[in-house]
Amino acid sequence: MIQFTLFALFFAALVVADVDEKDVLVLTKDNFDTTVADNEFVLVEFYAPWCGHCKKLIPEYAKAATELAESGIKLGKVDATVESELAGKYEVRGYPTLKWFRGGKPSDYSGGRTADDIVQWTKKKSGPPSKELKADEVADFVKDKAAVVGTFKSRTSDAYKTFIETAKDGDLDDFLFADVEGDEDKIELYTTFADVQTVAGDLKDFVLGKGYPLVDELPAAWERYSKKGLPLAILFVDPSQDNKELLATVTKAAEQVKDKLSFSFADGIRFKQQIERMGGDTETIPGIAAMKLSGKANYPYNGELTADALQAWAEGIADGSIKPHLKSEAIPENNDGPVTVVVGKTFNDIVKSGKKDVLLEIYAPWCGHCKSLAPIYEELGAAYADNENIVIAKIDGTANDFDVEYRGFPTLKFFPAGGDMQDYEGGRTLEDLKAYIEANAVNAAGDDADSGDKDEL
Image 1 (cartoon, rainbow, N blue to C red):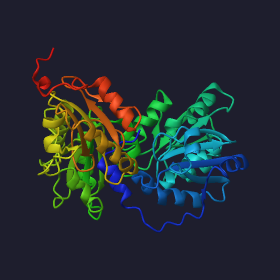
Image 2 (image 1 turned 180 degrees about the horizontal axis):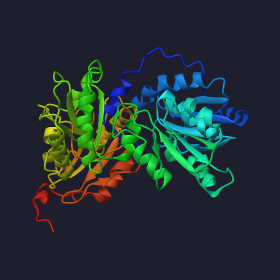
Image 3 (image 1 turned 45 degrees about the vertical axis):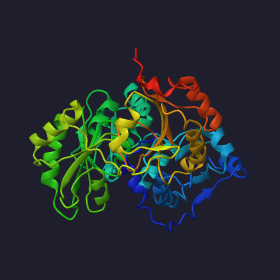
Image 4 (image 1 turned 135 degrees about the horizontal axis):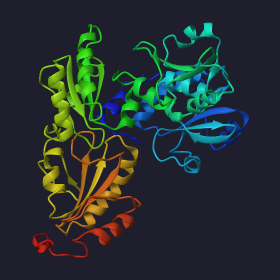
């Protein structure tokens, strides 16, 4: 699922223009089948040239391809906007979509988006789930890595077989697995942030619960936080300073609210623009702000950086007692066009008043699909210009905050008069859009201007 927070989109702007992609195969309908047939292991990225997340991935993907060049693992890319048949065949629904081909058979890529993540994931998927080691090889294997090492009296035991099956689990792709023979059965978890831990209870649950720092660094940990789905607080720090004591304080707060809100930290110098986007003070570092990963709501924090104060703030976000800071463009001076322009400050008045039927497009200025839809949407607005109780509207999702969850651009939402919001999932032709409105709008089919004032059931 694509989480369209501005933090994720901002990463795309940091991509270096001149990236050496010499080891990334350019795949088309003419060479795709032969490439996946002639190579045992191929990772394929389906992308769109305008996609911000795809641009962010370019240097990481190229770096991984070069590192894997001699391993027999190939990395390729497909421009899905050109190779639409390939995109359709492999059910590409968003960008970027990564597919793993082993022996020509496709499966979904479930790893992270950094070069290290890609290399580790593909090596794990192309080799045995656990590497057999001798006891004196363990120290080198686990050095500076997240790893799980099982010691077994026999590699034919049920305990060993269960260990191997767990090692295959895609949810544990961030961890390397190894096994050794010894005098007793035990499993140990190695991380870069804590002492070695002996696994107790269910192996998968233990690793997922203890294998990551409670307060992890962005952007490396972005994917994992996104999957968790909780509101995310970001501590912006100056990396040139000693932040250990502050991180310990934040971790103490995070321990108390870990099922309600996640805490993370990021480089406040590098990502200063993101602080501003979240309503924070760019001149105050360290500083902290939170955001919801569904919809768009930001919560800048202005209190003391103590564990108790941060815990209370986090609990207030979770229970709704702390209200979000909503960003908005200026209200348009002239809004007489066929498509009504909505901004954060006018969202509730125009879209959620309940008096009119409103079709709302959530768009991004850089989005290619949004640009393609624009002339059709203008025609749609003109078609209903004489019905003041049907509003065809649009809002720039990158410049305004509003409490609606959406997953990509463009997204169309329909707000029927007096009814609940609906997701529009139909076609994007003028005929498709008009047919939907006629079928779902309370004020369709020539309802008069007074219909919006009728009593509602």
